[in-house]
Image 1 (cartoon, rainbow, N blue to C red):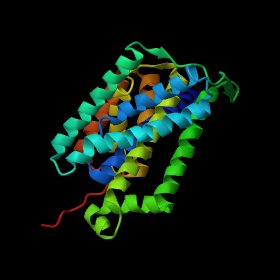
Image 2: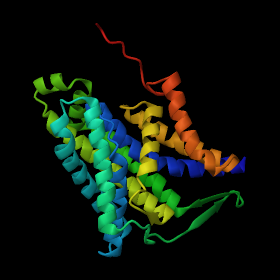
Image 3: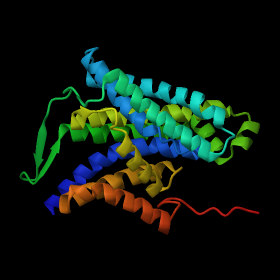
Image 4: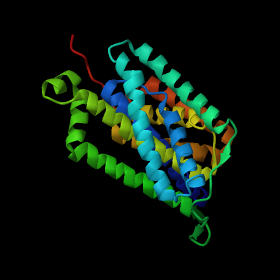
Length: 294
């Protein structure tokens, strides 16, 4: 019982990172039907920007987090303008290959700038562990930070999407970009804004992982990026609540597999879930089948 609850806490902590990255995947896919495989590397860049802010500019955790999110928001807009916008009317395979190219570019650029070796993320928060229920459960202050920051960012995102003018534009473009343009919505600006929001959330995920695991490297975005994609598909890609649900679910499943089985199988289980979902319900848990009229 206590082991299960402990793994549940660990799973929610890990799932919060997957959810932050998955939100970027799902928003971009919802707007322009693009699977942005460079998104995991934006998450990596976010971790390095926070590292630079703390180590070289001697900033605290919160300013480093905010600067990292702002920088990656601009990076997301630049990537969209330079790499994806010129291919907006091209085939999906062309855009997909471009996304993989952007991913490799970011990874190699970071290796040139910061080196290929792993870096120790500085200790910006003191380690405190809290023992609950007669020492049956253990939760650290870093886990609490990760969960609280993730929840705050999700609430802000939900507010932006549902209550702001740009959020309404995002929903309109996701529904029908041509009709949205006829209604006077600037589709290009809306797409750029979507990339900026998604990239900022990914950066936050990268900073939180650096804080928790105390290690970052230029390839750290590859596997979490793929798993976040699995989480987005699991919940229903293109659906924001689905990305949140998928992220937390995947994190909990991984930690349960590690806790009751072996950590060697956790990656295999994540991708087995993807295959299972694609076979059984390709639209994801919250997705709905839409019949096309001929």
